[in-house]
Image 1 (cartoon, rainbow, N blue to C red):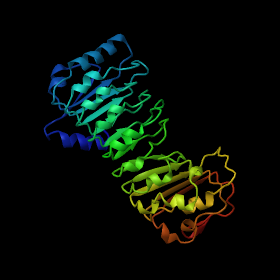
Image 2 (spheres, rainbow, N blue to C red):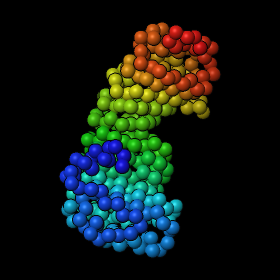
Image 3 (cartoon, rainbow, N blue to C red):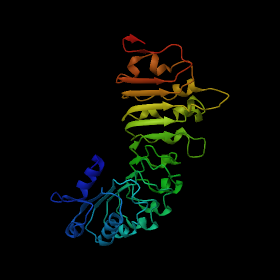
Length: 318
């Protein structure tokens, strides 16, 4: 299990509890007696496979189960799974549905204790409005949800306890008004928009962000002051940053120089990537004083077609 899932699973189960793993079959005792259960589909897509899953759904009930992981390793064998029976598991804390659903029922609102929801690789197109009452939800993973259209603003406004948002390789944009999630720690990608609630200033108070962050569509940042409003210099737990401008931008005025100047990161930064930058000079925080970024060990410069001189890194000149 993923580290976050493992830690949460440990916190909601006693030390004596073990994760029961069922592969393409059902053991009634495991289904009814476990607090942590993983059901894996691996065999060829047949009607019997669908029946096994249906039987599993109908069998599961009660308030004992805390962690449920349903993993589909089949390819298009199950087009959609009715997960409504799972909504009666009132004590569920962790629910992982890998490549199994095309939609969530409104009754997801009944899982009041849910803290971790993973819908990665699903063909889900929209999230139900009822999701916004899951006030205990801390992790929402939507990685590789290629058909997801958006995360509604109402969800952003109400799920204020979200700490981890997974949206790698997901088709929809960063949710608007993400500044509401002041406890957010994981946000791998932020797309700057000119729409209300989508500007780079939404990052200002998200100072718990950690590890890696990619900021894309930087052509939508107005100027240096707008870039500074992201307060990247105050995000000391971010180790890897990537700045990306759109390659097909058609702006009459190129302000990349001043925007990059305003994106000064915290001195703890270890890795920096700059892509599609059309400015002609590097920011002062990168070229003038190596002590501004003393922990920087990796830098990538991609498609910087207007830069003539590269900054000095350490004791060597590139």
